[in-house]
Amino acid sequence: MTTTNEIDAETIAEQRTVAEVVRTAIRFEAAAEAFYARLLDRVRPEVQPLVAELVQEEREHGQRLHHLLDSGELVAELRARMRAPASMPAFEAMLEPPQLPSDPSDDDIFDYAMAREQTAAEHYAALARAAINPVLRETFAFLADEEADHIAKLGQRWGRLSGS
Image (cartoon, rainbow, N blue to C red; front, side, top):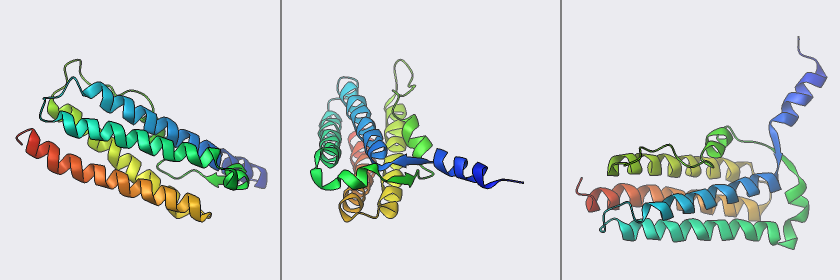
């Protein structure tokens, strides 16, 4: 039988402040930017413009998230606690550099990039659904759309450029 204190402790353990969620997203975007930046010299020249575009877009996502923390209008919301979405563990796992082979193939890189973008799209969509504040909801919805766009770009352009 579960007591009220056990339920409360479990609920609290699953919660994060909005600021913690945003800081984790900033770290995720920085890790994505670094991942794509490291790929620039490892992919074929015809794929490099796509990878460079992703570096820039991930950097812009991080800047947008930093703005949420720096904005004085969200002080109260940033202190609020929210239940971490089910996507949080997979999202946080991608803060670490990927375990790719020492000489990854285009397929290895593509598979990891697609997994990263899919995880981000799902996570940001969950955060958008959970956000009460319209600025947070709009920001997370924008990021979910951006990550979905990355999935489409990778699927279309990488396949075409790499000759698949």
